Image (tube, rainbow, N blue to C red):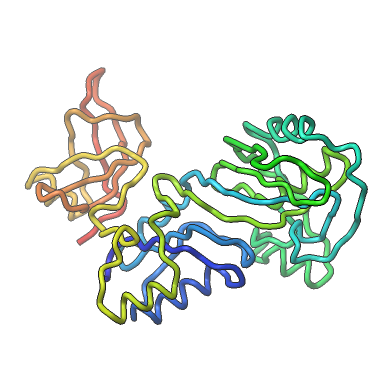
Length: 303
């Protein structure tokens, strides 16, 4: 194991950084990154990039995510989840299944979302939760987010948490979405549990937890679908295959002229060698004429 993608099922009670640190010790490799943070209380899919695959992190981190979670209506906390201090409790007598579904559906699309006060979002180099812990005011910086699906998965009952499914673009806070749901239902709501089940083409069913990773690594056993070799990592854009001359130019960071090139100027392109090895990620910097000819500039080159 050296260069590739590791699909981990994170357990509750640890940070994403903790998972990276544990994996470094297990596989005895320092160069490891992750593709999208999970809160300590959240569980589920966490993608780790190893070796030269860490240079692909920025392309994988933007993939859409899917979550299964539960929300506790009638309760509001300072962290927007059950790890925080309760700020208010309100009756939920007027809440109905129909109203919940209607409000949830109203969030589908783009909307301006304010991150939780206790979050890793930064302002002037400081994280929001660092300000909040010191008792300082956290700026209400709303950012556009995209929600593909937000729907109930269980029948509403006042004495039980509400199950939901969330599909969203990168940068969306599930805690804030549940908080905003409570605001619109006029009863308050906080996130009770959250489990990430998909990131782009990657599924939780392929993941392994850290204990299993440790056991299989010590026994020198195959990791199965949880390990994706470097050359097989699926990237969210098209690809081209370079000939020998183009490969030499790409290795020196030089542009190449490509025929049968799909995409527009500015689009990323996965560049493969004749041996179908990933040698670079480039960008289309020019389209020539009205056909399919264009110029690709390598941006990330792998020796």
